[in-house]
Image (tube, rainbow, N blue to C red; front, top):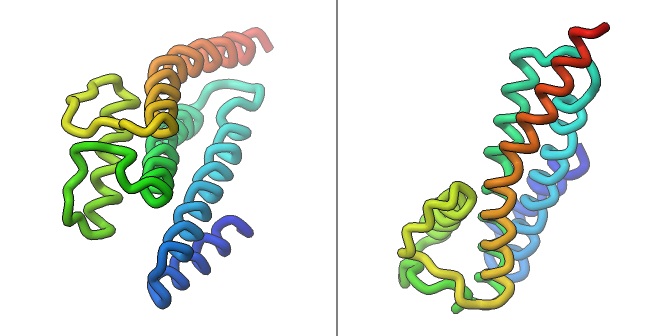
Length: 156
Protein backbone atom coordinates (compact mmCIF):
# COMPACT_ATOMS: atom_id res chain seq x y z
CA UNK A 1 0.00 0.00 0.00
CA UNK A 2 2.85 2.38 0.80
CA UNK A 3 4.40 1.85 -2.64
CA UNK A 4 1.03 2.43 -4.31
CA UNK A 5 0.40 5.63 -2.34
CA UNK A 6 3.90 6.83 -3.11
CA UNK A 7 3.28 6.14 -6.79
CA UNK A 8 0.01 8.10 -6.76
CA UNK A 9 1.65 11.05 -5.02
CA UNK A 10 4.46 10.97 -7.57
CA UNK A 11 1.97 10.89 -10.43
CA UNK A 12 0.03 13.87 -9.08
CA UNK A 13 3.25 15.81 -8.53
CA UNK A 14 4.41 15.06 -12.08
CA UNK A 15 1.07 16.19 -13.53
CA UNK A 16 0.85 19.34 -11.40
CA UNK A 17 4.54 20.32 -11.50
CA UNK A 18 6.14 18.78 -14.60
CA UNK A 19 9.91 18.83 -14.31
CA UNK A 20 12.80 16.40 -14.70
CA UNK A 21 12.76 15.85 -10.92
CA UNK A 22 9.05 14.95 -10.74
CA UNK A 23 9.44 12.73 -13.84
CA UNK A 24 12.32 10.93 -12.13
CA UNK A 25 10.32 10.63 -8.90
CA UNK A 26 7.27 9.23 -10.71
CA UNK A 27 9.34 6.71 -12.71
CA UNK A 28 11.19 5.60 -9.57
CA UNK A 29 7.89 5.18 -7.71
CA UNK A 30 6.57 3.10 -10.61
CA UNK A 31 9.61 0.83 -10.44
CA UNK A 32 9.15 0.43 -6.68
CA UNK A 33 5.42 -0.29 -7.00
CA UNK A 34 5.90 -2.86 -9.77
CA UNK A 35 8.75 -4.53 -7.89
CA UNK A 36 6.56 -4.85 -4.78
CA UNK A 37 3.80 -6.34 -6.96
CA UNK A 38 6.33 -8.79 -8.40
CA UNK A 39 7.33 -9.88 -4.89
CA UNK A 40 3.76 -10.16 -3.54
CA UNK A 41 2.63 -12.26 -6.51
CA UNK A 42 5.76 -14.43 -6.21
CA UNK A 43 4.87 -15.28 -2.62
CA UNK A 44 1.42 -16.46 -3.73
CA UNK A 45 2.64 -18.30 -6.83
CA UNK A 46 5.55 -20.15 -5.28
CA UNK A 47 4.11 -21.19 -1.93
CA UNK A 48 3.83 -24.91 -1.30
CA UNK A 49 0.76 -26.78 -2.38
CA UNK A 50 -1.10 -27.74 -5.54
CA UNK A 51 -0.77 -25.65 -8.66
CA UNK A 52 -4.09 -23.96 -9.36
CA UNK A 53 -5.41 -21.85 -12.20
CA UNK A 54 -4.80 -18.77 -10.04
CA UNK A 55 -1.14 -19.66 -9.59
CA UNK A 56 -0.67 -19.99 -13.33
CA UNK A 57 -2.35 -16.62 -13.81
CA UNK A 58 -0.08 -15.14 -11.14
CA UNK A 59 2.98 -16.54 -12.90
CA UNK A 60 1.82 -14.90 -16.13
CA UNK A 61 1.27 -11.62 -14.29
CA UNK A 62 4.82 -11.85 -12.98
CA UNK A 63 6.20 -12.55 -16.45
CA UNK A 64 4.32 -9.60 -17.97
CA UNK A 65 5.28 -7.31 -15.10
CA UNK A 66 9.01 -7.79 -15.72
CA UNK A 67 9.10 -5.91 -19.05
CA UNK A 68 7.00 -3.14 -17.49
CA UNK A 69 9.65 -2.74 -14.80
CA UNK A 70 12.35 -2.73 -17.45
CA UNK A 71 10.46 -0.15 -19.53
CA UNK A 72 10.43 2.14 -16.49
CA UNK A 73 14.16 1.49 -15.99
CA UNK A 74 14.76 2.35 -19.65
CA UNK A 75 12.73 5.56 -19.25
CA UNK A 76 14.80 6.39 -16.18
CA UNK A 77 17.94 5.81 -18.24
CA UNK A 78 16.66 8.14 -20.96
CA UNK A 79 15.82 10.77 -18.33
CA UNK A 80 19.39 10.60 -17.04
CA UNK A 81 21.05 10.25 -20.46
CA UNK A 82 18.79 11.40 -23.33
CA UNK A 83 20.94 9.75 -26.00
CA UNK A 84 20.96 6.34 -24.31
CA UNK A 85 18.99 4.85 -27.23
CA UNK A 86 18.99 5.40 -30.95
CA UNK A 87 15.80 5.05 -32.94
CA UNK A 88 13.54 6.77 -30.44
CA UNK A 89 11.03 9.23 -31.91
CA UNK A 90 12.54 12.72 -31.76
CA UNK A 91 9.31 14.49 -30.79
CA UNK A 92 7.70 11.79 -28.68
CA UNK A 93 5.24 12.97 -26.09
CA UNK A 94 5.38 11.32 -22.67
CA UNK A 95 2.79 8.66 -23.45
CA UNK A 96 4.48 7.83 -26.74
CA UNK A 97 7.82 7.58 -24.97
CA UNK A 98 6.29 5.21 -22.40
CA UNK A 99 4.72 3.13 -25.18
CA UNK A 100 8.00 3.08 -27.09
CA UNK A 101 9.93 1.84 -24.05
CA UNK A 102 7.28 -0.83 -23.36
CA UNK A 103 7.59 -1.95 -26.98
CA UNK A 104 11.39 -2.08 -26.71
CA UNK A 105 11.18 -3.93 -23.39
CA UNK A 106 8.85 -6.63 -24.73
CA UNK A 107 10.88 -7.13 -27.92
CA UNK A 108 14.02 -7.46 -25.79
CA UNK A 109 12.41 -9.80 -23.25
CA UNK A 110 11.16 -12.10 -25.99
CA UNK A 111 14.50 -11.85 -27.84
CA UNK A 112 12.80 -10.62 -31.00
CA UNK A 113 14.95 -7.49 -31.13
CA UNK A 114 13.81 -5.88 -34.37
CA UNK A 115 16.71 -3.41 -34.26
CA UNK A 116 14.66 -0.26 -34.74
CA UNK A 117 15.58 0.91 -31.22
CA UNK A 118 19.15 0.28 -30.09
CA UNK A 119 20.64 0.91 -26.65
CA UNK A 120 23.95 2.75 -27.06
CA UNK A 121 24.64 3.78 -23.46
CA UNK A 122 26.50 1.07 -21.47
CA UNK A 123 23.86 1.14 -18.71
CA UNK A 124 21.03 0.80 -21.24
CA UNK A 125 22.83 -2.07 -22.99
CA UNK A 126 23.37 -3.82 -19.66
CA UNK A 127 19.68 -3.48 -18.84
CA UNK A 128 18.72 -4.82 -22.26
CA UNK A 129 21.04 -7.81 -21.80
CA UNK A 130 19.59 -8.51 -18.35
CA UNK A 131 16.06 -8.22 -19.71
CA UNK A 132 16.75 -10.67 -22.51
CA UNK A 133 18.34 -13.17 -20.09
CA UNK A 134 15.34 -12.95 -17.76
CA UNK A 135 13.07 -13.41 -20.75
CA UNK A 136 14.77 -16.70 -21.56
CA UNK A 137 15.42 -18.04 -18.06
CA UNK A 138 12.19 -17.08 -16.28
CA UNK A 139 9.80 -19.28 -18.29
CA UNK A 140 12.07 -22.32 -17.95
CA UNK A 141 12.61 -21.76 -14.23
CA UNK A 142 8.93 -21.03 -13.69
CA UNK A 143 7.81 -24.17 -15.47
CA UNK A 144 10.25 -26.30 -13.46
CA UNK A 145 9.06 -24.78 -10.18
CA UNK A 146 5.36 -25.19 -10.99
CA UNK A 147 5.89 -28.83 -12.02
CA UNK A 148 7.78 -29.44 -8.76
CA UNK A 149 5.00 -27.83 -6.72
CA UNK A 150 2.35 -29.90 -8.51
CA UNK A 151 4.25 -33.14 -7.94
CA UNK A 152 4.77 -32.30 -4.26
CA UNK A 153 1.06 -31.50 -3.95
CA UNK A 154 0.09 -34.84 -5.47
CA UNK A 155 2.34 -36.77 -3.05
CA UNK A 156 0.57 -35.32 -0.01
